[in-house]
Length: 314
Image 1 (cartoon, rainbow, N blue to C red):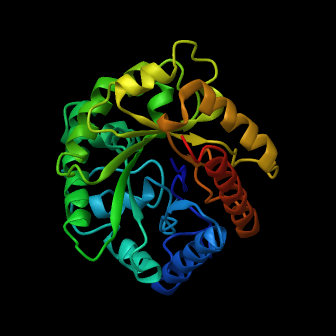
Image 2: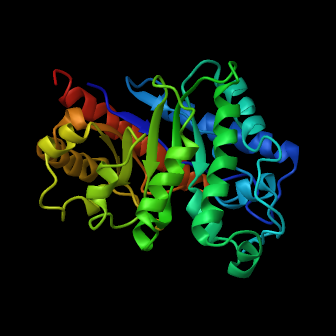
C-alpha cells in the first residue's frame, strides 16, 4: 500500500496578473512547477502524480476563451452557443510531458455547472432556457476536451480530475452528477477519475459516494471528522478512495510533518489505509509564493514517505 501525493491543481506561475501569460512565461511556469515536484520527490520512496500547475488562469478562466465566452474575468458572458472551439489544455499538458518524460500526469477539467454559474444570468438565458441547459452544453463541450486529451498517445495521462469547488455552496447535485458523467463519458477504465470538492462536505458526502464515473474523492480531511456515519465499511462498499487534503493553503503557516502525520494515522485507523489513495493540499497553490509552495510540496513528500513506511505491510 503506497499513498500517492498530488497537487489539487494550481501552482504559482512566474507572473500572477494580468493574464494571459506569454508563451515563454507559460513554459517557464510549467518548468518551475515540474522542477518543484521533482525536487520534492528526489531521494524519496513515494508515488507522485504530477500536474502542469495550470499557469494560464484560474480554473474558470482557463476554459472560458476556448469555449467561446466573452470577457476578461468574472462574470463571463455567453454571446453564442457554448462549444469546444479548439484545444484548451493540450499544449500545456504537452509541455509538461516534455519536462517529465513518462512520469504519470493528471489532467484537470472544471465542473460544467461552475462554468455556467460564472456567466451572467442574462447572457446564458439569451441562449438557453435555464442554468441546467447551459450546464449541459458546457458538459458536452468539456467532454470533447477530455476526449482530445486522452486521444493523444504522447501524453502519460493516468488520471482526470473534475474541479467542483461550488458543490458545497448549494450547487444542484443531481445536475452536477449528470454533467460530470457527460464530461467523463469517454474515459476508459484504465484512467482513474477524481472529483475535487472544497470546504465542508458533511451534508453532501453521501451523494458524493453515490456519484457514477468517480473513483477518487478529493476532500479536506478536517471536514471528514464530523461525519459520524462515515467509516471504512462505507468507503469500501462505495468502491471509492479518498484523496485527503491535509494542508490549508490560505495561510502562511504550514503544519508540521508530525501534526499532519498524526491526523493521517487517525484517518488510516478510522477509514482503513486501503481506502486512502493519496494526500494533497486543501486547494490550489496559485496564490502562494513560490517559496511557500515549494515548502508545502516538500512537507507532503516527507509525510507520505513516513506514512508509507508505517503502513508498508498493509
